[in-house]
Length: 247
Image (tube, rainbow, N blue to C red):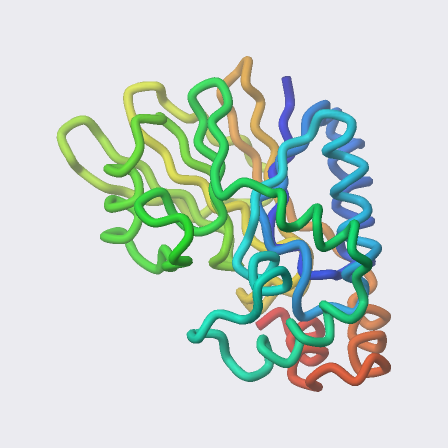
């Protein structure tokens, strides 16, 4: 089975459309959405409806910090742009869409794989995995061999040997990576809706559960239109520039 892992969609309709189409072209038959469906982008209602439709068809969706903030108000640690966008996003969603975000779990376990937005050691506190030490802490917090998470907005892959040795790969788009069963893995597919590694192309990953191979992808999309919609909506200009620059 090929499973598409998509995270940090951030209300970016143009990016999400292209990623879903690309995943279908890769014969993905299962979808896991790792949170942050709203925030920053101009199309929160459309993106939430896409996730709801996929969940109704069997997909798994996890709550992100922007989803939680839209339901219950911004976290104190959120920057001003994020807090402004949370308030704007809440006005764009109807009650059913907000209820859907409120219903999402913080974690899910599926065939030995942990799905979480931020990390395994404190899923609701939204700490980032910035370095190897953070990755080790997260992998030590779960019995699952593989963790899939988002939140960081850059594609990364960490692995932990039984001896305690930590390592990481720099994923190359389109090149399958075998995930050895002798190690624990922490997979960050990168952001579909707001990449921050100086490449504006959308990120996601496909895991083949039969071959145990993971493939990262970069998907070009019309970020000029997405950025223009952010500006037209009156959202912070920096958010539009970020889509154009990928940073």
